[in-house]
Length: 267
Image (spheres, rainbow, N blue to C red):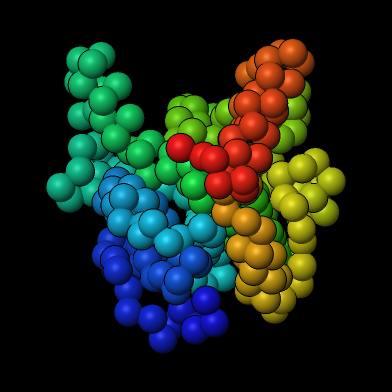
């Protein structure tokens, strides 16, 4: 885990996404800094591919963006009549039947869904703008460490659409319904201090310290026994969907598995 990312041969490097792996740590980097890491369907497909390519040795995945912005959201070319070459335009999507349109959006979401898998812990390192799809990509991760210049914003509603890249569930879970509604409908910026206070971010640091803070957190996560982390993450992720007694039962079942495993009696 000690080698700098730039010294590692990428397992994937296309469509604005680079994946490198160093033992238990994987890094997914958005590499289109010239366009502030604007997102497109091709990028979403590459993000999904990165998730499928993760070796079994990986325990922590860091998501970062090159340049001054984590991601400024959708590529504005998607909003033009001609759209992005090779991709459906918004008008073209609207003309598809219900099943086809649903399947297309579900395909886009695949780049955002794997970050919460129980076998990994994902950390978004967020600096500068994280707008719309960029905000939702940061929300796809388990943890967020932000630079003091961070500016989160959900701008979809102002464009006449809705956040549909898996961001609404974690947003409500982190900040509650009322604040999530206000953030989405007004499209306002949420900066570092509020992000930490509201639960959107775990930690805010000066921009120059962002990489070091994320690296320290990643090492701390890897230090804990893997199976215990997997069980703990599964317990916490499921807690909101269970009532108190069901959560108690889930704790007992998880602990029973851990005790038997530590005693060499696991399956």
